[in-house]
Amino acid sequence: MELYNCSLEELWQRLEQGEVSSLEVTRSVFGRIAAVDDTIAAYLETDEKGALAQAEAADECRRKGEKTTPVTGIPLGLKDLLSTKGLKTTCASRMLADYRPEYDATVVARLREAGAVITGKLNMDEFAMGSSTENSAIKATRNPWDLKRVPGGSSGGSVAAVAAATAIATLGSDTGGSIRQPASFCGVVGMKPTYGRVSRYGLVAFASSLDQIGPVTLTVADAALLLGVIAGHDKRDSTSVDLPVADYYGALKKDIKGLKIGVPKEYFGAGLDPEVEAAVRLGCSQLAASGAQLDDVSLPHTDYAVATYYLLATAEASSNLARYDGVKYGFRADDADGLLDMYRKTRAQGFGDEVKRRIMLGTYALSSGYYDAYYRKAQQVRTLITRDFDKVFADCDVLVSPVCPTPAFAFGEKVDDPLSMYLSDILTIPVNLAGLPAISVPCGFTKAGLPIGLQIIAKPFAEETLLRVAWHYEQLAGWSGHRPTLAGEAV
Ligand code: GLN
Image 1 (cartoon, rainbow, N blue to C red):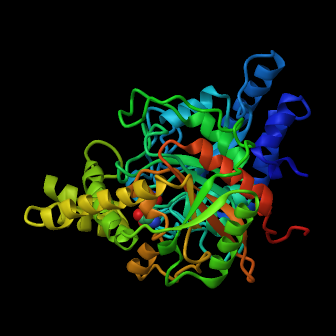
Image 2 (cartoon, helix red, strand yellow):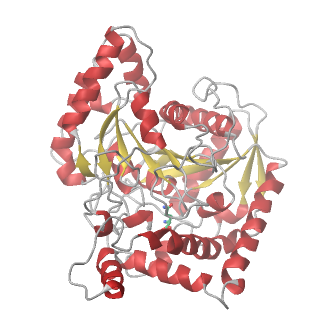
Protein backbone atom coordinates (compact mmCIF):
# COMPACT_ATOMS: atom_id res chain seq x y z
CA MET A 1 0.00 0.00 0.00
CA GLU A 2 1.20 3.52 -0.79
CA LEU A 3 2.36 5.37 2.30
CA TYR A 4 -0.16 8.19 1.77
CA ASN A 5 -2.95 5.64 2.07
CA CYS A 6 -1.91 4.46 5.55
CA SER A 7 -3.58 5.46 8.79
CA LEU A 8 -1.78 7.61 11.35
CA GLU A 9 -1.67 4.63 13.70
CA GLU A 10 0.02 2.40 11.14
CA LEU A 11 2.56 5.05 10.11
CA TRP A 12 3.35 5.81 13.75
CA GLN A 13 4.18 2.14 14.33
CA ARG A 14 6.20 1.82 11.13
CA LEU A 15 8.13 4.99 11.91
CA GLU A 16 8.86 3.78 15.44
CA GLN A 17 10.12 0.46 14.07
CA GLY A 18 12.33 2.27 11.59
CA GLU A 19 10.60 0.59 8.62
CA VAL A 20 9.94 3.93 6.94
CA SER A 21 11.21 7.45 7.39
CA SER A 22 9.17 10.59 7.77
CA LEU A 23 10.88 11.93 4.67
CA GLU A 24 9.49 9.00 2.66
CA VAL A 25 6.02 9.45 4.11
CA THR A 26 6.07 13.20 3.53
CA ARG A 27 7.30 12.81 -0.06
CA SER A 28 4.57 10.26 -0.67
CA VAL A 29 1.89 12.66 0.62
CA PHE A 30 3.22 15.54 -1.50
CA GLY A 31 3.28 13.23 -4.52
CA ARG A 32 -0.37 12.50 -3.84
CA ILE A 33 -1.17 16.20 -3.50
CA ALA A 34 0.50 16.85 -6.87
CA ALA A 35 -1.51 14.01 -8.43
CA VAL A 36 -5.01 14.73 -7.15
CA ASP A 37 -5.36 18.09 -5.46
CA ASP A 38 -6.04 19.90 -8.74
CA THR A 39 -9.16 17.75 -8.92
CA ILE A 40 -10.18 17.82 -5.24
CA ALA A 41 -9.04 21.38 -4.42
CA ALA A 42 -8.75 20.76 -0.69
CA TYR A 43 -5.63 22.89 -0.18
CA LEU A 44 -5.46 26.66 -0.22
CA GLU A 45 -1.72 26.64 0.34
CA THR A 46 0.87 23.90 0.74
CA ASP A 47 4.24 24.21 2.43
CA GLU A 48 6.36 21.48 0.89
CA LYS A 49 9.68 23.08 1.83
CA GLY A 50 8.71 23.56 5.47
CA ALA A 51 7.20 20.07 5.59
CA LEU A 52 10.34 18.37 4.26
CA ALA A 53 12.47 20.25 6.80
CA GLN A 54 10.12 19.12 9.61
CA ALA A 55 10.26 15.55 8.28
CA GLU A 56 14.06 15.59 8.37
CA ALA A 57 13.99 16.94 11.90
CA ALA A 58 11.59 14.15 12.92
CA ASP A 59 13.83 11.49 11.37
CA GLU A 60 16.83 12.99 13.11
CA CYS A 61 14.95 12.93 16.41
CA ARG A 62 14.22 9.21 15.97
CA ARG A 63 17.77 8.44 14.87
CA LYS A 64 19.08 10.03 18.06
CA GLY A 65 16.59 8.08 20.15
CA GLU A 66 14.96 11.26 21.47
CA LYS A 67 11.45 11.25 22.88
CA THR A 68 8.77 10.96 20.17
CA THR A 69 4.97 11.19 20.05
CA PRO A 70 2.41 9.43 17.83
CA VAL A 71 2.50 12.41 15.44
CA THR A 72 6.28 12.81 15.19
CA GLY A 73 7.02 12.88 11.48
CA ILE A 74 3.38 12.51 10.40
CA PRO A 75 2.08 14.86 7.64
CA LEU A 76 -0.98 16.70 8.93
CA GLY A 77 -3.10 19.47 7.34
CA LEU A 78 -4.82 22.40 9.04
CA LYS A 79 -8.11 24.17 8.41
CA ASP A 80 -7.28 27.67 7.28
CA LEU A 81 -8.68 29.35 10.38
CA LEU A 82 -5.93 28.00 12.62
CA SER A 83 -3.24 30.64 13.00
CA THR A 84 0.11 29.54 11.62
CA LYS A 85 3.15 31.74 12.14
CA GLY A 86 4.41 32.91 8.77
CA LEU A 87 1.93 30.74 6.81
CA LYS A 88 -1.14 32.41 5.38
CA THR A 89 -4.34 32.08 7.41
CA THR A 90 -7.13 33.31 5.17
CA CYS A 91 -10.33 31.80 6.59
CA ALA A 92 -11.11 31.47 2.86
CA SER A 93 -12.05 35.14 2.88
CA ARG A 94 -10.98 38.10 0.76
CA MET A 95 -10.76 39.92 4.09
CA LEU A 96 -7.71 37.89 5.16
CA ALA A 97 -6.38 36.93 1.72
CA ASP A 98 -2.84 38.10 2.53
CA TYR A 99 -2.83 37.69 6.29
CA ARG A 100 0.17 35.94 7.84
CA PRO A 101 -0.19 35.61 11.63
CA GLU A 102 2.65 36.53 13.96
CA TYR A 103 2.02 33.48 16.12
CA ASP A 104 0.84 29.86 16.09
CA ALA A 105 -2.51 28.76 17.52
CA THR A 106 -1.99 26.63 20.63
CA VAL A 107 -3.02 23.46 18.76
CA VAL A 108 -0.50 24.24 16.03
CA ALA A 109 2.23 24.92 18.59
CA ARG A 110 1.39 21.58 20.25
CA LEU A 111 1.60 19.73 16.96
CA ARG A 112 4.94 21.36 16.18
CA GLU A 113 6.32 20.53 19.64
CA ALA A 114 5.12 16.96 19.16
CA GLY A 115 7.16 16.79 15.94
CA ALA A 116 4.31 16.80 13.38
CA VAL A 117 4.88 17.75 9.75
CA ILE A 118 2.50 20.50 8.60
CA THR A 119 1.50 20.00 4.96
CA GLY A 120 -0.50 23.20 4.49
CA LYS A 121 -3.78 25.00 4.93
CA LEU A 122 -7.17 23.68 3.91
CA ASN A 123 -10.23 25.19 2.31
CA MET A 124 -13.40 25.99 4.23
CA ASP A 125 -16.56 28.07 4.10
CA GLU A 126 -15.61 31.70 4.64
CA PHE A 127 -15.08 32.24 8.38
CA ALA A 128 -16.51 28.72 8.92
CA MET A 129 -20.03 29.84 7.97
CA GLY A 130 -21.67 27.18 5.87
CA SER A 131 -22.30 23.49 5.34
CA SER A 132 -20.83 22.86 1.88
CA THR A 133 -17.56 24.84 1.50
CA GLU A 134 -19.30 26.68 -1.34
CA ASN A 135 -18.97 29.89 0.67
CA SER A 136 -15.18 29.86 0.27
CA ALA A 137 -14.15 33.06 -1.49
CA ILE A 138 -11.20 31.21 -2.99
CA LYS A 139 -12.23 27.87 -4.52
CA ALA A 140 -14.74 25.02 -4.47
CA THR A 141 -13.57 21.76 -2.87
CA ARG A 142 -15.02 18.59 -4.40
CA ASN A 143 -16.26 15.50 -2.64
CA PRO A 144 -13.74 12.74 -3.49
CA TRP A 145 -16.59 10.20 -3.67
CA ASP A 146 -18.50 12.15 -6.29
CA LEU A 147 -16.90 15.20 -7.87
CA LYS A 148 -20.29 16.72 -8.66
CA ARG A 149 -21.12 16.88 -4.97
CA VAL A 150 -20.01 19.10 -2.10
CA PRO A 151 -17.68 17.74 0.58
CA GLY A 152 -19.84 19.31 3.29
CA GLY A 153 -18.70 22.16 5.45
CA SER A 154 -17.40 24.22 6.82
CA SER A 155 -14.28 22.02 7.22
CA GLY A 156 -14.67 20.73 3.63
CA GLY A 157 -10.97 20.96 2.80
CA SER A 158 -9.96 19.17 6.01
CA VAL A 159 -12.22 16.17 5.32
CA ALA A 160 -11.66 16.01 1.56
CA ALA A 161 -7.89 15.90 2.18
CA VAL A 162 -8.21 12.91 4.53
CA ALA A 163 -10.65 11.14 2.18
CA ALA A 164 -8.40 11.74 -0.85
CA ALA A 165 -5.26 10.79 1.12
CA THR A 166 -3.58 14.17 0.59
CA ALA A 167 -2.97 14.38 4.37
CA ILE A 168 -2.69 11.56 6.89
CA ALA A 169 -5.02 13.46 9.23
CA THR A 170 -6.16 17.06 9.66
CA LEU A 171 -7.66 19.46 12.15
CA GLY A 172 -11.02 21.11 11.60
CA SER A 173 -13.33 23.22 13.70
CA ASP A 174 -16.93 22.58 14.70
CA THR A 175 -19.31 25.36 15.74
CA GLY A 176 -22.56 23.74 14.62
CA GLY A 177 -21.40 20.54 12.93
CA SER A 178 -18.51 21.65 10.73
CA ILE A 179 -16.32 18.64 11.51
CA ARG A 180 -18.98 15.93 11.82
CA GLN A 181 -21.21 16.80 8.84
CA PRO A 182 -18.41 16.93 6.25
CA ALA A 183 -16.82 13.82 7.80
CA SER A 184 -20.13 12.01 7.22
CA PHE A 185 -20.28 13.31 3.60
CA CYS A 186 -16.75 12.12 2.81
CA GLY A 187 -16.63 8.81 4.70
CA VAL A 188 -14.00 9.71 7.31
CA VAL A 189 -13.96 10.08 11.10
CA GLY A 190 -14.58 13.57 12.49
CA MET A 191 -14.68 14.43 16.15
CA LYS A 192 -15.82 17.49 18.08
CA PRO A 193 -14.40 17.43 21.61
CA THR A 194 -16.23 18.86 24.64
CA TYR A 195 -16.26 22.66 24.71
CA GLY A 196 -13.16 23.49 26.76
CA ARG A 197 -11.25 20.26 26.03
CA VAL A 198 -9.05 21.87 23.36
CA SER A 199 -7.65 25.40 23.48
CA ARG A 200 -9.19 27.87 21.04
CA TYR A 201 -6.26 30.29 21.29
CA GLY A 202 -5.31 31.26 17.75
CA LEU A 203 -8.49 29.80 16.21
CA VAL A 204 -10.05 32.68 14.28
CA ALA A 205 -13.32 33.16 16.15
CA PHE A 206 -16.73 32.63 14.58
CA ALA A 207 -19.02 31.99 17.59
CA SER A 208 -16.81 31.79 20.66
CA SER A 209 -19.24 29.98 22.96
CA LEU A 210 -19.65 27.17 20.41
CA ASP A 211 -16.35 26.87 18.47
CA GLN A 212 -14.18 23.84 19.16
CA ILE A 213 -11.19 22.36 17.30
CA GLY A 214 -11.05 18.63 16.61
CA PRO A 215 -9.43 15.83 14.61
CA VAL A 216 -10.43 14.56 11.17
CA THR A 217 -8.95 11.11 10.54
CA LEU A 218 -9.24 7.84 8.66
CA THR A 219 -10.03 5.80 11.77
CA VAL A 220 -11.21 6.22 15.36
CA ALA A 221 -7.80 5.15 16.71
CA ASP A 222 -6.23 8.00 14.71
CA ALA A 223 -8.70 10.45 16.27
CA ALA A 224 -7.78 9.19 19.75
CA LEU A 225 -4.08 9.63 18.99
CA LEU A 226 -4.47 13.14 17.59
CA LEU A 227 -6.80 14.29 20.36
CA GLY A 228 -4.22 13.15 22.90
CA VAL A 229 -1.74 15.61 21.37
CA ILE A 230 -3.99 18.69 21.10
CA ALA A 231 -6.18 18.38 24.24
CA GLY A 232 -5.53 20.03 27.56
CA HIS A 233 -5.58 23.26 29.49
CA ASP A 234 -4.03 26.40 28.04
CA LYS A 235 -3.57 29.49 30.13
CA ARG A 236 -4.14 31.58 27.01
CA ASP A 237 -7.76 30.33 26.68
CA SER A 238 -9.67 30.81 29.91
CA THR A 239 -12.48 28.57 28.61
CA SER A 240 -10.11 25.62 28.25
CA VAL A 241 -10.60 23.36 31.21
CA ASP A 242 -7.90 22.19 33.59
CA LEU A 243 -8.72 18.47 33.60
CA PRO A 244 -6.18 15.71 33.02
CA VAL A 245 -5.93 14.42 29.45
CA ALA A 246 -6.77 10.71 29.46
CA ASP A 247 -4.95 8.03 27.48
CA TYR A 248 -7.66 7.99 24.82
CA TYR A 249 -5.82 5.52 22.60
CA GLY A 250 -5.01 3.15 25.45
CA ALA A 251 -8.67 3.00 26.52
CA LEU A 252 -10.17 2.16 23.12
CA LYS A 253 -10.35 -1.59 23.51
CA LYS A 254 -11.99 -1.68 26.92
CA ASP A 255 -15.23 -3.64 26.73
CA ILE A 256 -18.55 -1.90 26.02
CA LYS A 257 -20.72 -4.66 27.51
CA GLY A 258 -23.50 -3.22 29.64
CA LEU A 259 -23.03 0.35 28.37
CA LYS A 260 -26.34 2.12 27.90
CA ILE A 261 -26.94 3.66 24.51
CA GLY A 262 -29.82 6.10 24.04
CA VAL A 263 -31.47 6.51 20.65
CA PRO A 264 -33.17 9.95 20.54
CA LYS A 265 -36.48 9.63 18.70
CA GLU A 266 -36.42 13.27 17.53
CA TYR A 267 -33.27 12.52 15.50
CA PHE A 268 -35.14 10.06 13.30
CA GLY A 269 -37.90 12.44 12.23
CA ALA A 270 -39.32 13.83 9.00
CA GLY A 271 -36.78 14.63 6.29
CA LEU A 272 -34.45 11.80 7.21
CA ASP A 273 -33.26 10.01 4.09
CA PRO A 274 -34.43 6.35 4.25
CA GLU A 275 -31.00 5.00 3.29
CA VAL A 276 -29.36 7.06 6.05
CA GLU A 277 -31.94 5.86 8.54
CA ALA A 278 -31.48 2.21 7.58
CA ALA A 279 -27.68 2.42 7.88
CA VAL A 280 -27.82 4.10 11.30
CA ARG A 281 -30.47 1.68 12.61
CA LEU A 282 -28.32 -1.22 11.49
CA GLY A 283 -25.40 0.40 13.36
CA CYS A 284 -27.52 0.57 16.52
CA SER A 285 -28.37 -3.12 16.30
CA GLN A 286 -24.72 -4.02 15.74
CA LEU A 287 -23.83 -2.15 18.92
CA ALA A 288 -26.63 -3.95 20.76
CA ALA A 289 -25.38 -7.31 19.51
CA SER A 290 -22.00 -6.56 21.03
CA GLY A 291 -23.48 -6.26 24.49
CA ALA A 292 -24.49 -2.60 24.76
CA GLN A 293 -28.03 -1.91 25.87
CA LEU A 294 -30.23 0.21 23.57
CA ASP A 295 -32.94 2.51 24.93
CA ASP A 296 -35.30 4.90 23.16
CA VAL A 297 -34.95 8.38 24.63
CA SER A 298 -36.40 11.82 23.95
CA LEU A 299 -34.78 15.24 23.58
CA PRO A 300 -37.99 17.29 23.41
CA HIS A 301 -36.48 20.71 22.57
CA THR A 302 -34.61 19.48 19.48
CA ASP A 303 -36.96 21.35 17.12
CA TYR A 304 -35.82 24.69 18.52
CA ALA A 305 -32.10 24.06 18.14
CA VAL A 306 -31.60 25.43 14.63
CA ALA A 307 -33.39 28.70 15.38
CA THR A 308 -31.53 29.05 18.67
CA TYR A 309 -28.17 28.40 17.03
CA TYR A 310 -28.74 30.82 14.18
CA LEU A 311 -29.55 33.58 16.68
CA LEU A 312 -26.64 32.93 19.04
CA ALA A 313 -24.01 32.07 16.43
CA THR A 314 -24.87 35.11 14.30
CA ALA A 315 -24.92 37.40 17.36
CA GLU A 316 -21.48 36.22 18.38
CA ALA A 317 -20.24 36.47 14.80
CA SER A 318 -21.48 40.04 14.46
CA SER A 319 -19.41 40.96 17.48
CA ASN A 320 -16.34 38.83 16.59
CA LEU A 321 -16.19 40.07 13.01
CA ALA A 322 -16.36 43.73 14.02
CA ARG A 323 -12.56 43.64 14.20
CA TYR A 324 -12.22 43.51 10.40
CA ASP A 325 -12.40 47.21 9.77
CA GLY A 326 -9.50 47.80 7.39
CA VAL A 327 -7.51 49.54 10.11
CA LYS A 328 -5.59 46.95 12.10
CA TYR A 329 -4.98 44.10 9.71
CA GLY A 330 -6.46 42.34 6.72
CA PHE A 331 -7.99 43.81 3.60
CA ARG A 332 -8.57 47.57 3.19
CA ALA A 333 -10.56 49.10 0.32
CA ASP A 334 -8.37 51.64 -1.38
CA ASP A 335 -11.01 53.68 -3.17
CA ALA A 336 -12.51 55.21 -0.02
CA ASP A 337 -13.37 58.79 0.70
CA GLY A 338 -12.81 59.28 4.43
CA LEU A 339 -12.87 56.94 7.43
CA LEU A 340 -16.54 55.92 7.43
CA ASP A 341 -16.47 55.26 3.73
CA MET A 342 -13.32 53.18 4.25
CA TYR A 343 -15.06 51.01 6.87
CA ARG A 344 -18.09 50.61 4.65
CA LYS A 345 -16.21 49.72 1.48
CA THR A 346 -13.74 47.47 3.27
CA ARG A 347 -16.51 45.38 4.77
CA ALA A 348 -18.66 45.49 1.62
CA GLN A 349 -15.79 44.27 -0.57
CA GLY A 350 -13.99 42.06 1.95
CA PHE A 351 -16.84 39.83 3.14
CA GLY A 352 -18.90 37.42 1.03
CA ASP A 353 -22.70 37.23 0.98
CA GLU A 354 -23.17 34.59 3.68
CA VAL A 355 -20.87 36.39 6.11
CA LYS A 356 -22.74 39.66 5.51
CA ARG A 357 -26.07 37.89 5.98
CA ARG A 358 -24.92 36.55 9.34
CA ILE A 359 -23.49 39.86 10.54
CA MET A 360 -26.78 41.54 9.71
CA LEU A 361 -28.88 38.84 11.41
CA GLY A 362 -26.67 38.91 14.50
CA THR A 363 -26.52 42.67 14.77
CA TYR A 364 -30.32 42.77 14.50
CA ALA A 365 -30.74 40.10 17.22
CA LEU A 366 -28.50 42.10 19.54
CA SER A 367 -29.98 45.52 18.86
CA SER A 368 -31.84 47.37 21.55
CA GLY A 369 -35.52 46.49 21.62
CA TYR A 370 -34.91 43.09 20.00
CA TYR A 371 -32.31 41.76 22.42
CA ASP A 372 -34.90 40.35 24.87
CA ALA A 373 -37.09 38.88 22.16
CA TYR A 374 -34.26 37.16 20.29
CA TYR A 375 -30.87 36.92 21.95
CA ARG A 376 -32.08 36.47 25.53
CA LYS A 377 -34.82 34.07 24.50
CA ALA A 378 -32.30 32.01 22.52
CA GLN A 379 -30.04 31.80 25.59
CA GLN A 380 -33.00 30.50 27.61
CA VAL A 381 -33.80 27.86 25.01
CA ARG A 382 -30.12 26.88 24.93
CA THR A 383 -30.47 26.05 28.63
CA LEU A 384 -33.55 23.91 27.94
CA ILE A 385 -31.68 22.01 25.22
CA THR A 386 -28.76 21.41 27.59
CA ARG A 387 -31.17 20.14 30.24
CA ASP A 388 -32.70 17.67 27.76
CA PHE A 389 -29.24 16.13 27.41
CA ASP A 390 -28.59 16.22 31.19
CA LYS A 391 -31.78 14.24 31.72
CA VAL A 392 -31.05 11.49 29.22
CA PHE A 393 -27.44 11.27 30.36
CA ALA A 394 -28.64 10.49 33.87
CA ASP A 395 -29.49 7.06 32.41
CA CYS A 396 -27.41 6.64 29.27
CA ASP A 397 -23.67 6.57 28.65
CA VAL A 398 -23.86 7.70 25.03
CA LEU A 399 -26.43 8.60 22.37
CA VAL A 400 -26.45 7.35 18.78
CA SER A 401 -28.04 9.09 15.79
CA PRO A 402 -27.48 10.07 12.16
CA VAL A 403 -25.06 12.99 11.59
CA CYS A 404 -26.96 14.66 8.78
CA PRO A 405 -30.45 13.89 7.42
CA THR A 406 -29.04 13.31 3.92
CA PRO A 407 -25.84 12.24 2.19
CA ALA A 408 -23.73 14.81 0.28
CA PHE A 409 -25.78 17.10 -1.94
CA ALA A 410 -24.86 18.48 -5.37
CA PHE A 411 -23.08 21.79 -5.97
CA GLY A 412 -25.58 24.62 -6.24
CA GLU A 413 -28.42 22.58 -4.75
CA LYS A 414 -28.78 24.70 -1.62
CA VAL A 415 -26.71 27.88 -2.17
CA ASP A 416 -29.69 30.02 -3.08
CA ASP A 417 -31.77 28.69 -0.22
CA PRO A 418 -29.93 29.51 3.04
CA LEU A 419 -32.74 28.10 5.15
CA SER A 420 -32.51 24.63 3.64
CA MET A 421 -28.71 24.82 4.07
CA TYR A 422 -29.21 25.75 7.75
CA LEU A 423 -31.63 22.86 8.26
CA SER A 424 -28.99 20.34 7.22
CA ASP A 425 -27.33 21.07 10.59
CA ILE A 426 -30.34 19.98 12.62
CA LEU A 427 -28.72 16.85 14.11
CA THR A 428 -25.34 18.36 14.91
CA ILE A 429 -26.22 21.80 16.31
CA PRO A 430 -27.81 20.67 19.63
CA VAL A 431 -24.47 19.09 20.59
CA ASN A 432 -22.66 22.41 20.22
CA LEU A 433 -25.35 24.30 22.13
CA ALA A 434 -24.88 21.86 25.03
CA GLY A 435 -21.06 21.84 24.67
CA LEU A 436 -20.90 18.03 24.39
CA PRO A 437 -18.33 15.79 22.66
CA ALA A 438 -19.50 13.89 19.57
CA ILE A 439 -18.06 11.96 16.66
CA SER A 440 -19.04 10.95 13.16
CA VAL A 441 -17.98 7.44 12.18
CA PRO A 442 -18.49 5.95 8.68
CA CYS A 443 -21.55 3.68 8.68
CA GLY A 444 -22.01 2.59 5.10
CA PHE A 445 -22.81 3.88 1.62
CA THR A 446 -25.99 4.71 -0.26
CA LYS A 447 -26.84 2.79 -3.42
CA ALA A 448 -25.36 5.69 -5.35
CA GLY A 449 -22.07 5.16 -3.53
CA LEU A 450 -22.20 8.13 -1.14
CA PRO A 451 -20.85 7.74 2.40
CA ILE A 452 -23.14 7.85 5.45
CA GLY A 453 -22.09 8.81 8.98
CA LEU A 454 -23.20 7.60 12.40
CA GLN A 455 -23.07 10.14 15.22
CA ILE A 456 -22.18 9.20 18.78
CA ILE A 457 -22.65 11.81 21.52
CA ALA A 458 -21.26 11.57 25.07
CA LYS A 459 -21.36 13.42 28.38
CA PRO A 460 -19.10 16.44 28.90
CA PHE A 461 -15.44 15.38 29.03
CA ALA A 462 -16.33 11.72 28.44
CA GLU A 463 -14.15 11.58 25.29
CA GLU A 464 -12.72 8.30 26.52
CA THR A 465 -16.14 6.61 26.47
CA LEU A 466 -17.08 8.33 23.21
CA LEU A 467 -13.99 7.06 21.40
CA ARG A 468 -14.28 3.62 22.95
CA VAL A 469 -17.85 3.13 21.69
CA ALA A 470 -16.85 4.57 18.31
CA TRP A 471 -13.87 2.22 18.06
CA HIS A 472 -15.99 -0.84 18.89
CA TYR A 473 -18.61 0.24 16.37
CA GLU A 474 -15.92 0.71 13.74
CA GLN A 475 -14.59 -2.83 14.33
CA LEU A 476 -18.09 -4.30 14.09
CA ALA A 477 -19.16 -2.33 11.05
CA GLY A 478 -15.93 -2.13 9.07
CA TRP A 479 -16.77 1.01 7.10
CA SER A 480 -13.69 3.08 8.01
CA GLY A 481 -10.65 3.24 5.77
CA HIS A 482 -12.45 2.79 2.45
CA ARG A 483 -11.00 4.94 -0.32
CA PRO A 484 -12.72 6.58 -3.27
CA THR A 485 -11.37 5.86 -6.73
CA LEU A 486 -10.24 9.12 -8.22
CA ALA A 487 -10.14 9.77 -11.95
CA GLY A 488 -7.21 8.14 -13.69
CA GLU A 489 -6.47 5.67 -10.93
CA ALA A 490 -6.38 1.94 -11.32
CA VAL A 491 -9.10 0.35 -9.20
N1 GLN B 1 -23.08 24.79 9.10
C1 GLN B 1 -23.10 25.53 10.34
C2 GLN B 1 -23.08 27.01 10.03
O1 GLN B 1 -23.17 27.35 8.91
C3 GLN B 1 -21.97 25.13 11.21
C4 GLN B 1 -20.71 25.81 10.88
C5 GLN B 1 -19.59 25.39 11.77
O2 GLN B 1 -19.71 24.44 12.55
N2 GLN B 1 -18.53 26.15 11.70
O3 GLN B 1 -23.01 27.82 10.89
